[in-house]
Length: 331
Image (cartoon, rainbow, N blue to C red):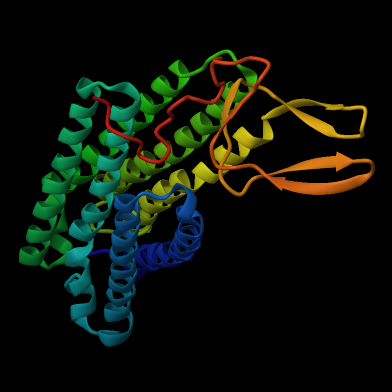
């Protein structure tokens, strides 16, 4: 049996990381609902609300999990022999968080690629992960002893390795299809490059944590080192999703920032905007600055497509569906 430091030390670190990431999640959720009035979709609102509820439950369970052996059972044999009661719920709660997020990204990939051949493996591994998590929860409830947790090896490997594989497929697919969306227009390509970097960072983070979690569990038995990575894993998934949703605001700002390629001043001191594309969507509430003879006015641009009279019927630089808000399913 491992010592107290290698048993409860990693668990305490994992709970602390989980709690810190929960604070970031609250901030991300607040940001989402602050901007949803312009970009939100009802099913996304429900998804974010569901994830907030599940993550709150997860954080409460993790705090109770470490409170039990360090406070309630402090100094007793039961504290080091039996797993905390709330540890039983850890796999299933985490899977109920990660699986919907993976399904969301699978839907996004289908929107931008239109291919079920790419989406099918993601669905397969996501549900394999869910099945493994359910099995791990049932087995933990039956075994209940730290010394016998290695008997869960099969269920743990199915749960976490399947989740990691799904994350790798999601990240690779998004990168490939975002790369194919490049148009040769600098403003659009810069925006896609930024989204690709963000996708790579968040996708690799969750897959690395999930892989290291199961590797530590197998490589260093009779310890709890894996829990330092296991407990914050669900928060990485949810923060990854919320960061992706909140990136829509930055995406819209980048579109507006690149609307003008230059300014020309008329004979009466009026500053005219030259649009970089014949058709450009401008979100409601955006203002353009006009100068008339030294005075500065703000004129609101209607929330509709703006047409450049110099180039009627042309293509918009920004009509590129990157699936940032879930989009609409292709026919």
